[in-house]
Length: 130
Image (cartoon, rainbow, N blue to C red; front, side, top):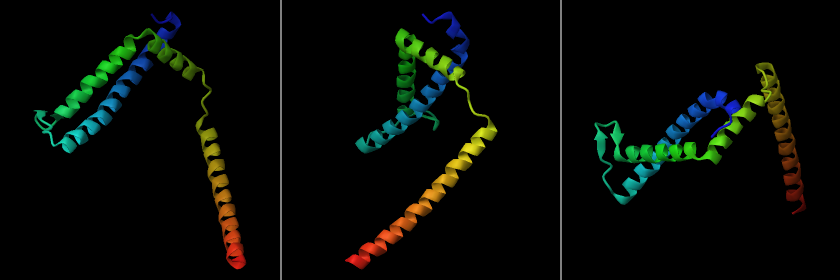
C-alpha cells in the first residue's frame, strides 16, 4: 500500500484527514441548511438542538469521502508524498518572518503612495486638458 518510509507521517496525514472531514462537514452542513430553508423543508433536530438532519447528512457524506480517499491507493500515496515534501521544506524562523513581513508592508505602503500621487497628477492633467 504505502511505502514504509512514509509510515512515519501517518499521524500527520491522519490528523489532516480528520480536520478535512470537520471542515467539509461544516461547510456542507451550512449549504444543506440553506437548501432546506430555500426549499422550505423542515431541518429535523436529531439529538436535541445539537444535531440537525443537515449536519448528520453532511457528516456521513464527509466521512464517506474521506474513507474512499484514504483507501484509494493513488490519493493515499499522494497524501504521504505531500507530507514527506512538507517535512523537507526549510521553514523560516520567527525573525525571518518578521523581517519579510516588514519589507512587504513597507514596499506596499511606498507603492500605494506612489500610485496615489501618480493618480492625482494624471487626474489633474486630464481635467486641465479636457
